[in-house]
Length: 59
Image 1: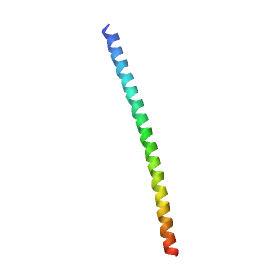
Image 2: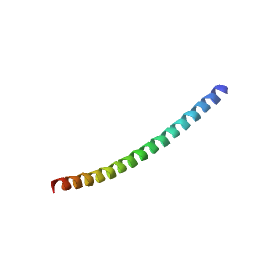
Image 3: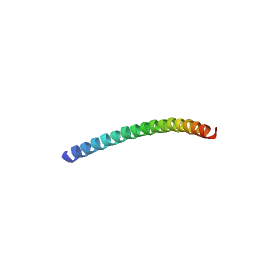
Image 4: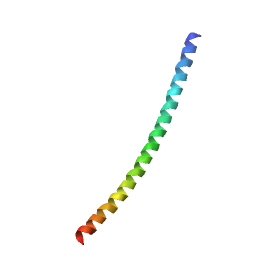
């Protein structure tokens, strides 16, 4: 009976660990998506900035 109880406890701990892992994976994916969006925004602003500098230098 103790062996069965220990196995149940180990199974429960494993399931909790898997659940936490899934949550962390989802959070990581969301953070990566946000980072990508911010990178695209920065990229856009840098493009505008450098085009303005180029125009100013050439004129």
